[in-house]
Image (tube, rainbow, N blue to C red; front, side, top):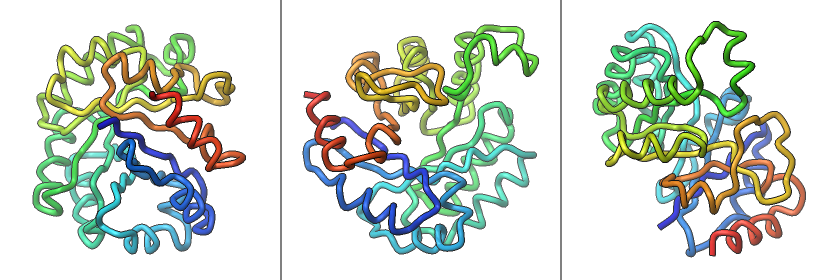
Length: 229
C-alpha cells in the first residue's frame, strides 16, 4: 500500500487536529510528520505523546551532532512510545548513524531511523555555495550508501534521485519530500515532483504538506487520492 506522510507544519494543536480529522482514508497508508516547529512548541511534544498508537507518527528532528549526543537525544524520546519514524542527517557521518540506530533499538524497537540526504530546498547552484564540489546526485548516492552501511531503515531523498537510490537501498524505505500536486507552486522547494511520478520512480513513501494543508484540506486530500489512481 502506498504510504503518504502529511507534513503538519504548524505550531498549533488545533490545526493539527483539523489536518488529522480531514485526512482519513483506507485507500492508502497515512502517516503524520511533525517537524521542529511543532515539536518545540509549548504543547507540541505532549500532544504527540497522546496520539493513538495505531497512527503512523514521524518526528522529523533531523538530528546531527556528535554520535553520543545524537544517541542521548534518542534516549530522551523513550516516553514517546507511539513514534514510528525519526530522522537524522546522513551528513552527520557513519558513526553517528550507527549510534542512532543502536539507541533506537534500546529505546523503542518499533522506531525506524531514516537518514536525510540533501534537502529538497537545495539545487545545484545553492549546494555549491556551502562548499560542496560534487553534484547533488553524487552526494545523495554516497550518503545513501553510508545509511545502508549504518543499518538505517531508510533514506529521505528527492524524487529525482530515487531510481538510482533504489538500486542501492533495495530493502530500505525511500521517502520523498518536495511533493506538490499538479499545478501547485514550488514555494521554497527546488527539486519537486508530483505524487504519482514519485511512486512510479520507486519511492515507498512521500511527504506532502502545503498542497494538502493550505486551503480546503478535505478537498485537497481528495485530489491527492484521485491523483494516485
